[in-house]
Picture 1 (tube, rainbow, N blue to C red):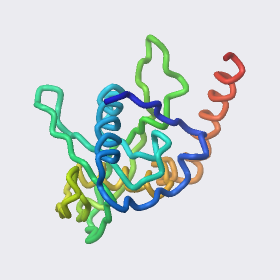
Picture 2 (tube, one colour):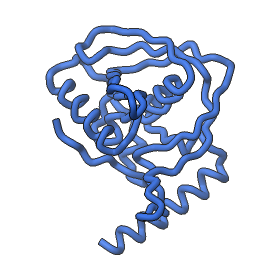
Picture 3 (cartoon, helix red, strand yellow):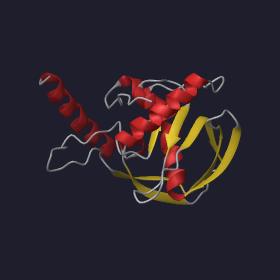
Length: 184
């Protein structure tokens, strides 16, 4: 297993849709293992292959709390359906949307914003071994799987915000990116 580099906004690769996986092979399993290790290393709860520059429809999620054993979930070619009309709002962050004000005093690595999504949905996918699976998703799990599938479709959670909020955040991120780029 290896820790991979996570692409960050404004990298244009984050806006490219991923392609379906034809078959779950040992290479795809290795990709999922690397993604999981990368996600844990970055203290995330979900990661899509697009975020590490691999444009295949693969995502990993682990919603276990710090005091619980790891509960990794693997999703190959996830397809969402049966969205509820009831909406939940969660403070979403993203390993690809770094906080431009991150410092040693403010170590929060991501920008968090309230995002509204359907409270429940269903996901059909292939698991780590290539077996077809179906799960009913609720609450944080529903939000997380929708967030990761958005990544696979080339959508960042910022695009789920109001145009004004999105514009303000993107402007700050671009400015911070330019500053970092100039200093390296």
